[in-house]
Length: 96
Image 1 (cartoon, rainbow, N blue to C red):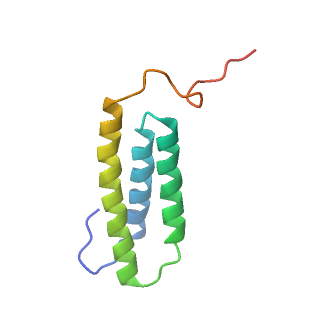
Image 2: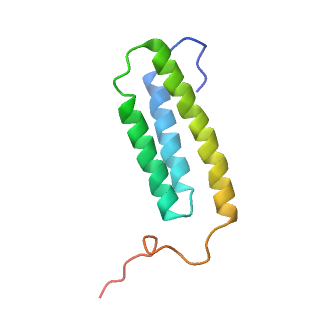
């Protein structure tokens, strides 16, 4: 996923970053944080979807990679402190 300085990332690199962020979101044990990371990922990519300036694209991609690193570290930290009781959103509904 490395791009040379000044060259915008390819479409496949952007998609890979998007998928990596969503996969990282699944690693959070808490429903609220998991959904927040997913929502923030989608919003961030939608916001930057219309960028045409190569410098802005490179900057947004670099920001996305740094956010992926932060989310990965946070997922590890949150996994160390998993709540003992599941959120009501994590409990599967029972059939009557």
